[in-house]
Length: 150
Image 1: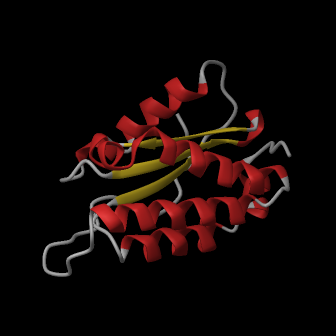
Image 2: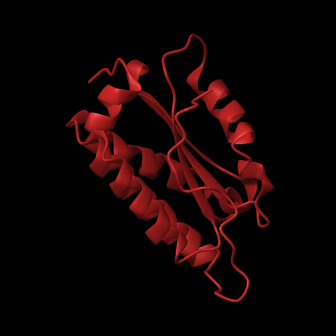
């Protein structure tokens, strides 16, 4: 499905459910999860995702354990980026299996479900390697979906 506007996307993705999934995942980990939805643009999706990763301050977490789900609905593409702290723990196979899980849902038009399942899986991996500690944990990054995209 191709989306023409943020408003149409909001009708397709349950923003509150996605935000709740982020909040629930982050209650089990010191890691940080963000979702960014980009409008149409020319160029390589991964390159723009990497710019968004920096723009959203994903590299500024204390343990370098941020994960970004970067989605470009108009191009039917998405990229999942993990900072060096989490990537060193889970390796490339994890990212590929996470992308496959989400792709299965996206192909069926289940965008909210795909995002929620991806966030849940990412949260479990983060929790295994970066568990939540109520005494020291702070929410380092916002949980809202970013619609700045680029």
